[in-house]
Image 1 (tube, rainbow, N blue to C red):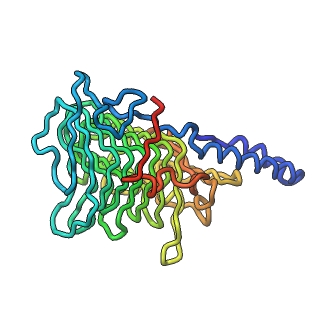
Image 2 (spheres, rainbow, N blue to C red):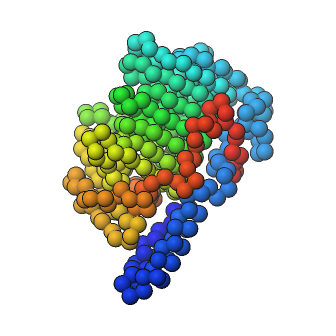
Image 3 (cartoon, rainbow, N blue to C red):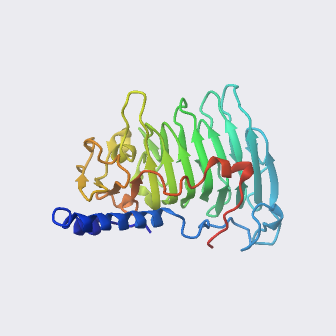
Amino acid sequence: MTLDFTKYDAEVAKFRAGSPNIAAAFDENKKLLIQLEGAPVTGLLPWRPPGLPQGADPLNPANFKDDQGRPFTVVDVNSPGTYPSSPDDTRGYYFRVNVDRNVTSGGRQQVALRGGKYRVVMKPVSKITGVGDPVTILPEVGATGVITHIEGGLLTGVNGPTFRTNQIVQVQACHVKVAPEAEHADLAQAWRGAKCPGIRIAYFTGHSDFTFFSDFTDEPGVVFGSETPAYWDLQHVDLHGPKALNCWLGMPRKAVWKGSDLWLETSFTPAGDRRGLDDQLRQYGEQYNPKFAGVKITQANGNVWQGPEGNSPIQAPGEIGKTPGDKLTYYQDPGLAGITWQYGVPPGGEFAPAAKVGAAYVPYGYMT
């Protein structure tokens, strides 16, 4: 659970003028609380893959069985394309994705995963760069209302996972880095036809110079209606990018965002500026107009800055939202009320370092 220091800071502020030593002691206590909050409580992933018995090794596909006791079909993915070639929505699939090479030819270059009642993607290694509008992993269609599970991935290229499926999607223990020169380079996004009941992301590290997470549920003149995830659940996430925009595109009030232990860190651009929490974590409405959804930033020193309601693109002045310990919440949009972002990096470093995922991944274990 994300800690709220609003009342704590208000009480500490009473001591700052007359008893600075007491205030300093409270400040040190707050640092310890933040460190405890940022560190994994158990180190376990919150969601187990479908078809895997509790305690079984997820790296052994033989351990996966569907609801009829049948083994999952193993699919090796060594080049961009659509897998399997003849999908079966009644079976479970275990994908081993290893597209560890550059793709420079024209047109769409992607790994599309189709079909299956259950889909598990373990330790994917994907390095796809090139022209056009490629994506790293594209889970599509499949049986309704079950689960696509992606775990232990090292995903680099012009885009992160794109979800165009009617299944719940779980992305855990993944490191995603998208190319800075790419157009529409999202770390993860729900695209056209994303009817999935929800998107779950945990122990996730992302680096992007364009967009972090996008809920793309409509375009100008094209409304997708109910084709939007019901929720995004984010746990233990750290995002990095000098100029990336964390966007909720389209009609975000149709999706509920919730999460805890969420971190965002920016660096200086060549022009010598950088964005703060309010600029990074903006929401977009119809026709791509920025909608700030009632942003409130609680600074590490206890001061509160509150942005305007509606579409006013007024940014927090100075270093507000750019100081370690600053936190951002939303007071206007109920769909964003359950999410809090903190500026900086987790005390223990990235939740999914590149050196510990992909081919080197060792499973964390699961809470459930």
